[in-house]
Image 1: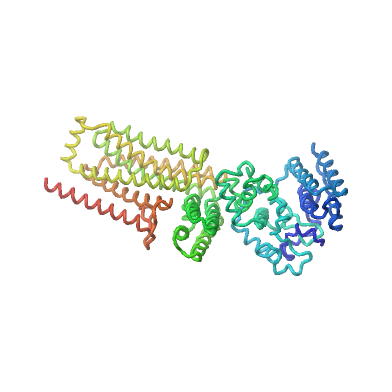
Image 2: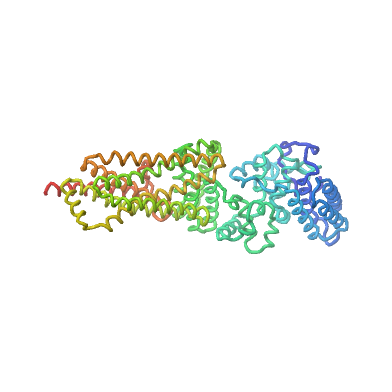
Length: 637
């Protein structure tokens, strides 16, 4: 082989992908694009200032340009075919006359763009590839020749002539886009040991192309690109996968600003241009950014990114992971917390790296388990059903108790306030869905802070209402209270409090449900989305039926028993909300979290950290003490 072909030698070891030249695509637009890419990269290397630097390579350029001209004429009939053929002939003439390298490359790129448009050539993957397994693919197929670091010095490199390509060579790799790498992997290079790897799936070939494209950039450059992208830069330039895979580093550099750094980062996070990355995949990517920031000395940024990795990624997939392996979900959650605490604390560097590796290893396992399980319409139906039932039950219990209370005490004029509260919460929840999915992106931290503060406020209100109900459990006191109320001592303030409890009880659950359904929705195809809607409909119907049954039968309870049970229920909900509120604020990084060895019971708001448990124990002590005090006061009367 001639040395000039090394730029196309993506040597995946000679024992892999053995396919004959005759089996490769011939005369297709992809083949023409492949040849044009080769010429645009190589010609300037071998013809400089009108002089041939390497005669053998120049002869090959002449040969390939002639092939392109013939192949274009052989393409299927198309209104633009003749214009393409003329430009291909011009390109061949420019090469024969040893024209300037930049002009030749420019025309070759121009023909590529017009050919793609004219024949609707698919130059992008169907979806943004998940690169979590790309390194393993590279190690299995490429490292023996190119080396783990992509420097062309693998263990089998010594036996190859020419030597494998050095993917770290900035001069040549800056002229390659991801599609060109994919095309070479798919088609190979005729007359060389680089064969087409059609035995690899299309998805795997795209993963390799993206991975190989990353070797010329460093972590610092990617870190700068991530920051620029987060600030809204590069969105017009990289508006989708097409622009991402067709842009070379050199072209991005010519755009100025942070374009080249953004391209470097997007090549490691292609899903960022589509917004279609899975929650766990997002966590893995963001953890990588966190570690890069920590290595660069940006401790606070690293910490915030680690919080984002949990809140905007892993947390949204928790329910799906629970369906697969609840223990895996718990261990991963704890590992991510340990890493972010170490990043912000005074842990040694080796400890941070070890904790990072442990967390990412568990995230990878979660990703693999979820992918292995797949997402079926049946699974989505039950996931949707469980989410709405789980999140709606807490609100239903509070609302049902309050509605039954109003009905039993003949205070039905308060029902419009009760219903107004939960209706307002549902309307605001619908607005939350529209805003979060269409207009702005609500961050995980904002979501958790909102949920946390709402939960703590709900806890305080429920605790007050619970004590109030308990104080009225005595029939004589209740009758006295009713007489006072009937005399019109208080109205507006009382009903406003009812509306507030109703609103808070429902909106907190609606807000959380919106985010969980969004995570489920973006990972589903049309059939699975229909199943999600079906599960939601069944769940809502079940909740309304449950509410009716609770209200219907609770109004028949004896007055003292009813108020006693209601106050106990609301007190329990206050304790649960307090634990969940603290956990939400800890997840958002607003409160410290000192882990202890204790069971995790999310349904009861119990999490293994000192702050939440201390608050819950304090509330329990307050509740028990308050009830004992009121009982003692009753005995004295």
